[in-house]
Image (cartoon, rainbow, N blue to C red; front, side, top):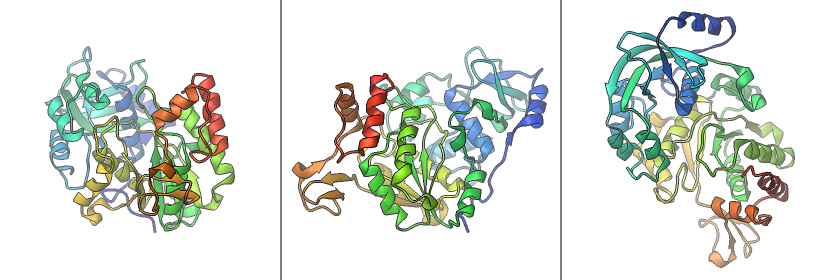
Length: 385
């Protein structure tokens, strides 16, 4: 039996076809609020159940409980706010209003019954959730772009499959749960990444596969910061490596359509909870999960899980130290398993790999498989990196 969704029930507030058209008709004469890119991602994930038990954007009680206590007001663990900001130029709204939700192009993506409109101290939010108010942090920059007024309430989300990228891999939580059952899995480990796969990823994924029934490769394809490898390139890398190096009955791949918040430890918990909704019992937490720059300690994202009762969290974090190729060992290892010092280790940062590709240098096979290196080099030549 798969793990239950967070909060005990998988939310379904997503509509297609005739039902979606009816929502569009209902908001025709309503006020329209604008979604930015992150909020649009969040709306879709609330609707699909990926953010269960949320049924909409947070009102004040949930927002304050989350940033202060890392729990929803009703009790469940929750580490980051999911909120809708009032945009400059949008109409003023009040409690009880029924409003439509549109993107910046004017396309309707859902509606909302407003429960509450409230002011927020955005720099206090930054300090409590990101651990910094430094302008060089992308999450701080995002918060400083907002008005400081949030709008909470339950939503309905419209799904337009024809607009979705990676359609063959676009599985909602209900669909991944069906897939896991069809494969005979009772336990599954999720792997989150916003980077192309390399040997260290492959090593920790396969270590995790030794203790569960299956692996869900769940690369993030929502909004990321400038400089990250594009999702299209990362997906090509995964497709290539799955051809020959993973047993097909024990692996599945689906995209994770969330936007990155770069919140380090708190985002690691957030990512784990959402993977629980997809049916995963375990979650890989590696080096500097969801980190950016030097804002977080190397293993802060692992330590934070110790704050929670395992039963309250409901998903098991698998904590891995950074992996590398050791020429003395003749294979992949971590500091827990290798007796040799750094002169024997091949470990490259994403920044170093991007610099090598820019110079026309293929990353070494000890770092990534040659097939993957060729894809990255091709993308670099085309200017996709």
